[in-house]
Image (tube, rainbow, N blue to C red; front, side, top):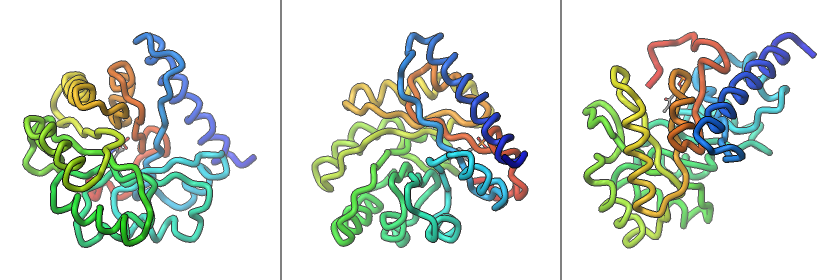
Length: 228
Ligand SMILES: *Cc1c(COP(=O)(O)O)cnc(C)c1O
């Protein structure tokens, strides 16, 4: 086994161990927590190592970058879109991804619903919630989340599989994760995509079912300016 593959396997095991420990501490042992390997901007060699090590679930934040990276070896993978999505790319996103985690507005819901009908393909849809009400971030405001989820169900026949959050950088993430969990519970939604390299254990303690981990798993992204 090459050192790159062994290195990935080892780092993956370490993270899974930390996930399991956090789940145990919260009385969630046995809870399914999916480790989403965030591959955006990572060099091809690291992706190859991850694939060779058996990683199959990947997160990307841009549709075109993801298509270039994955379209030719799509088979057997689970691809998740975790970045903001423009309505004019909805069809490309539906065609490529198994899950779209960033639905946050009716215009995009319409575009996704139409694309899903046209392509007869139904990726899992997560609603992104902007718990910190940050203007530069996507996501529905927490106070609008219940109404938005009701609109998805009633007007677009979209049943959200989960909720997603990216907490503000400078705040304690726990209260944001707890808020997301409360919104999900009162809307009958069971999956929570929350937690990144710096805070995934907190997220697991608060109920995360999907943690999105990039730099801690692969190493730092070389093009650090293009992270969001
Ligand atoms: C880049 C990104 C991540 C991964 O971030 P790391 O800090 O490298 O783990 C997770 N979620 C989203 C939405 C991202 O854009």
